[in-house]
Image (cartoon, rainbow, N blue to C red; front, top):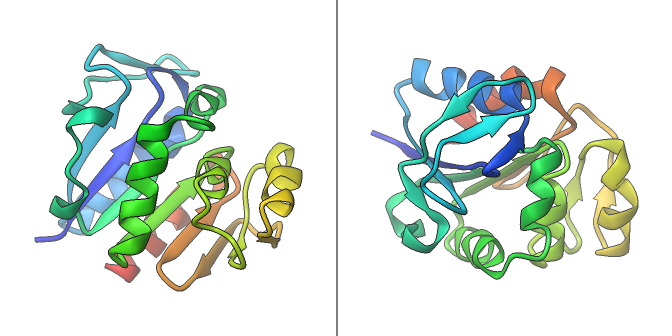
Length: 167
């Protein structure tokens, strides 16, 4: 059975990006775990909540087939977070499916794993991607090899399906 790790902000993750993506994965038989900065109840921008299975410090990337960073305004907490960057770098180095939606592709760009790749994101982060030598596409969902990025909440289900197809 494929296993996926979803990384959410402790506050202000985007509900649809977590829950719709998670539904797509689980309906395809993927076992999903959730990690955050703390193990406290994480709260979405629209009021949804989820209890993380682990903190970023407890993540063993080797246990997962996919690592997925969820957006929402709170995701900016990981833009310069070394733990989040290490998780992204390990996933990329191990040729895992590495995915990010909304503003979260900036986490991957800042971690250096999108250099020379095609990617999309929420428009507010397009300049950051370009500054990190990423070919910004502006598409709803962009896939470059094992890296999948999406623009925001309206793309969450297609994002989830694309991840499933890549596993």
